[in-house]
Length: 201
Ligand SMILES: C[S@@+](CC[C@H](N)C(=O)[O-])C[C@H]1O[C@@H](n2cnc3c(N)ncnc32)[C@H](O)[C@@H]1O
View 1: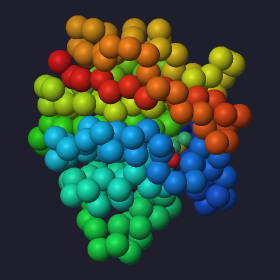
View 2: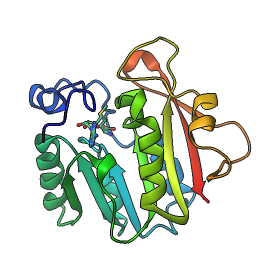
View 3: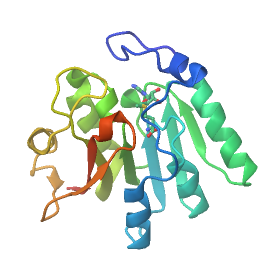
């Protein structure tokens, strides 16, 4: 699906066709594995992975028995996700859309955010926060990996914790105590992603 350049300045579809996807990790995100190991996903029945690209976490959620939705602008990425699910006899819903404009019929338990917020133009961030808030039921959780980057420009665009606290204000989101765990990216010059679980109020 094509989106206007002001909403998606990068040609994501072409990146997947060209296999120029440096944001991809070689396997499951270690934060996903840690959250799974500690039972953080146990209460989750329904989850959406916005801007899922070829992230293997979508299939992993389906394999855990979750009703998982993957959403992306790229038909090529979604076709890859479909093949991955079918290869293991799993099901999931795949939505080809500008997902910030989408709303579910029924609010969901969880959103899994991995290199999507940092990929959209910063001027769409308020729209992102409103969308994620609308997707989630009260008490629903945003499993977020906030990309840390000091340099200007993007994508990826940096998601510093002060900026995220402003974007996800305490009146609308409960923040956990303590410092978030950093996960350096194996490419992208080792930029760390900070793992934070926010709870929708
Ligand atoms: C940097 S990639 C990350 C892909 C995936 N999350 C991962 O971890 O490998 C950003 C993804 O967001 C998708 N995307 C960008 N803007 C979007 C939008 N408005 N709606 C849906 N998907 C979008 C792109 O097509 C691309 O797959």
